[in-house]
Image (cartoon, rainbow, N blue to C red):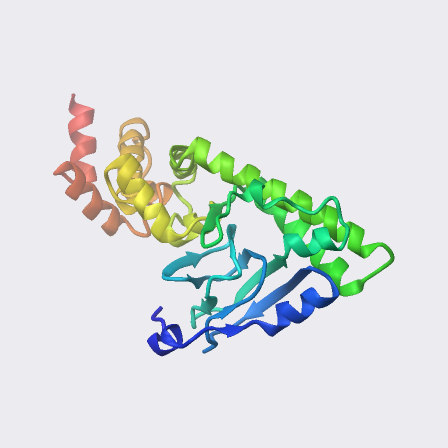
Length: 291
């Protein structure tokens, strides 16, 4: 997707929705279902938390552009000019939570979340790839927090304050887990899944969605960890498994084996197999049978 340069170069405007919301209570939250738009960059007080639920979008934060996909979290200072731009091919669903720590303390809430937990300097941001379990936890927590603010039942401010504190702690834990485990664990999990689901749809897009990362991020990880592309790895695993089946299952036809390892046709199976091994599947089977 291409960003409109005129929108990015225009002076940022003030986000009056958040500012007005802070006048009644220093926590603002909503659920958004967005389509492509031409809104200017904007600013507001406090901290903004964005959890992507569906679709994809580009977040402009200062002079940085970060793609967001389901299962990803962005945390940044509202003082930095920012805006979300939606891929025109899809709609985008998110939960956004903004809070002003100083305003919460002035309002007398001792459980106000500490920004020290987020390690967020004034002009910085964090992008976190959430593990599936933590994604579910944060999704439920932010949804409940949003509902409390909208419905305003008895004691809603106390509930919002406590829920927000838990949310900040969970985000901090996710940041630490991401820094500790690195990306090797993600690649290992992805490789294990591929090995156990060769007949399935193993497209880059489907796998990225399953593991809550962007396709671009998954491409980079495989190139760095495996020194081959994601697509090459999938083909490599399918050819390897087909060799085992050609050797151990003499009654299976080439078409049966092609389907069993995820190729859409025997012709494509033969073409990929030959490119990888230098011989056709039938030639490989005959040679192994003789030896």
